[in-house]
Image (cartoon, rainbow, N blue to C red; front, side, top):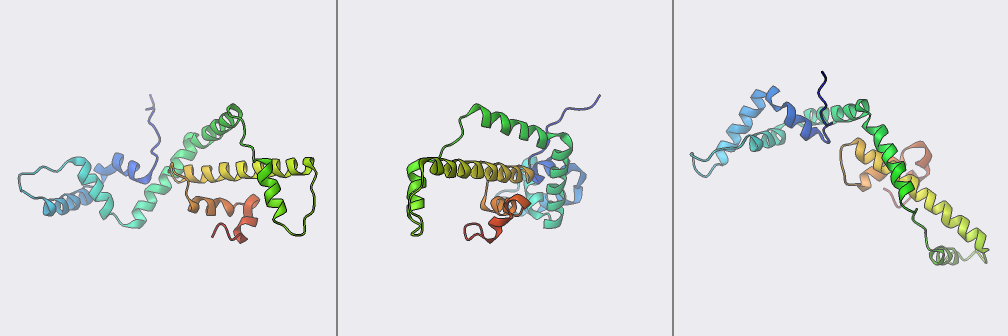
Length: 175
């Protein structure tokens, strides 16, 4: 019978589950922590030892853990499930709508533009909404791929390198 374990979200959480496989690293971490103790009677928790071991670990080994998490997520079907969840969320909530007055203000800032019909302004607003939605979802997938929950500018840069968003590579906004 196969165990139904949750896929780790980060390289660190994967390391925590496998820390016992690295006794030398744990021993070095315990020695380092012992040096920092205020009294010799103070006990060191296993969690502190594992945390210190992660800090002492070289960056290449940490990256191996991070890469394994990405592969685990891909093989466990989490990526497909997350896409399904994103679709459900976008259908549950009404899509964000850019205010038409903001679109008009942006259009008026261009000295070469004159007048736009209401239909044209609505089309531009809808195109902008769809772009922002697609780019945000792509960036969220990048964020989840790296086992993080917080979307960062770095994730936006990575998403902008995807074929459908390559034109952003030359943008002044994402550098």
